[in-house]
Image 1 (cartoon, rainbow over the protein chains, first blue to last red):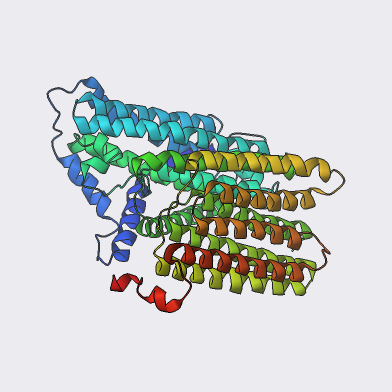
Image 2 (tube, each protein chain N blue to C red):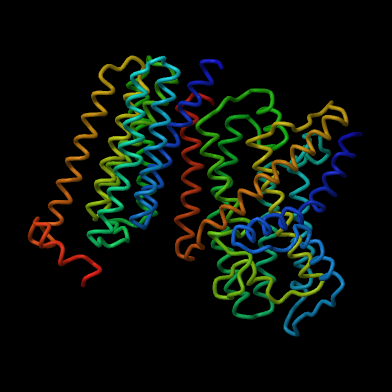
Length: 315
Length: 221
């Protein structure tokens, strides 16, 4: 019974805190750039404003263009619901594992790319083709990380991996360090952050994600923006949960443990968002032709993580 | 803190040295290579200091100090200065594309693991892991020397190789003459650096006379 309550709380929580996390990253970046910056709550106002506005759709757009925001937001939201954020006692935790998570994110990405190509503008097609290139490089790396984690813990379900780590089943492993590095690189690519893509860019030629949603307006744009914010929260919950699960509530724990878990989750997001802001400020965007090197590096790190498991006899 | 945790942390620091070896292969700018090398030396110093702590072997602190002062501070600063002074081209020239080099790097790590496994059949998993890590760092340094065309990056590759040897020496418990080895290697590295730069200066300006070099200074051209 409590699993359903916590699941509902998580469903609301991921959507409720996502704009704040994105706003905090923007605020950190502004301050580091020497600007005062907008308040961390500005994304809430932006989304509210977009929801008030009329959605303008191009004449050449088909039903794909109209459906894409809903499918994208829906699948990212569902993916965010199966990653334990503050408790592993979730109703949906048994239903899906990390591989299903990769698939759900793949669905969102597929529909975004379709929508980018649907209107027929050149920038949309350009963004879609780049996005697919990033996806084809990032997904193997993500799966490799999943494999090394599941070799350690014997399961691909995030809730059970977290329970395994919390029970002290695994110490400080070299493989975990390598897998963490690989997952961070994948998360940067999946969320379209610098050095892969610049979320704040106004120059169409350098856009990837922004180029695909260029034609959207009103509630459609609000959903697309919301999907990227929820995706950022999802990856923070994933990294914080798998590699630093301390404070997370477990099945059988009471409401106090869940409150501690909530506090720990928000603290982890705050730390990761600050680190992301600092990282993005200190690095320049990469050329498109170097994506393969960057994400190939993530894949190789994931591979090394698996190889080192056999050396340290953790399997 | 249990012995297992101490060893785990030692391996994690060793893995950081290995990662720095990989990111040396990944860099395309000369200054980025030098900064990454400084980071690797810093990680090596941390590894040596941690081993000194868990093995209760104070002489390893000397090795850590040498790595920190000589390799993480003096050598990178000197190389920065020399690259600036000599006006060396700041892009890294590679013999193979970065992606292929990285893949060769992973193949070498696998090779070192395959080599270490039968040799250390009687040893514990702990020794095996440190040896595999150190050997991978050595092989990555070799790879770096092979796949880079520029003298500076080749020297950095040589020093990365040497970092791997020191890592192996400090990880093996009761290894004699570790400090002496690291001093000897540092002298060797210094000699190589001097040799290469004097050679390069002569090649470029046909002289080692400083008075003649004055006219080649960038700001007077």
